[in-house]
Image 1 (cartoon, rainbow, N blue to C red):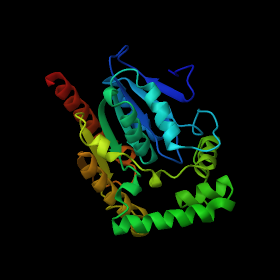
Image 2: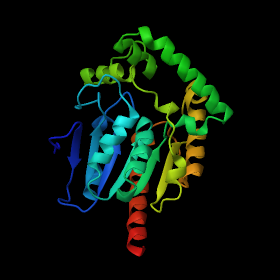
Image 3: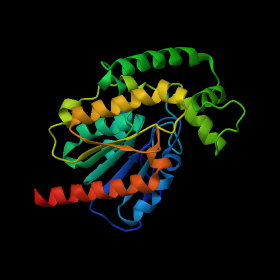
Length: 270
């Protein structure tokens, strides 16, 4: 089901029918909601799920510049009932910002490899990654969307992921995106809240060494710092890298179900 009369495209999985709460899934960059969270569809047997397309991605309208603050406002507007927020990568930054905007509506906060590098900028590996990211943005200004897509995915002769128009649109939007890795996330406002918090990261043990050195080490360090700063439980998913919810969906889905049950129990006892 598609929610109408909204500034963004939201697909609703509601196998259970009317519900007093909901889960909001927020994707990262270079993708869109249904592509990022396809493996989480079985969770609709247990919870009402809202699968978001951020502006400029998937079925949502174009935007002059993708912006995590605007995205956070869009998510906050969806929080008309108690909400479990799940954000991956760029979406992890959006989820944290939305959680601060509607604290009273947050039932739980789960972050999957949040790309909030600024939170951990004092870590030397993260500081080096931020420098690489800034140089990459400057170097990519003259690329076409297809060149940007191929460079970002690390493929030269492979076909563009399908549906092609969505993949190229995601690349075009990402080229003009406000970098989430420089966002000033108010982690000190999240830490004292009572709702459960979980940060998931890959172990990156099966990733190519160059990919891990360029990206993985910084993201794992960031996940650790974010978890400590917001008072979250950190869990690393073996045999996965930046997208454990796609690479190890059975494990991640069970972790999320258990986590949401914990939130239910915490609310019931409060």
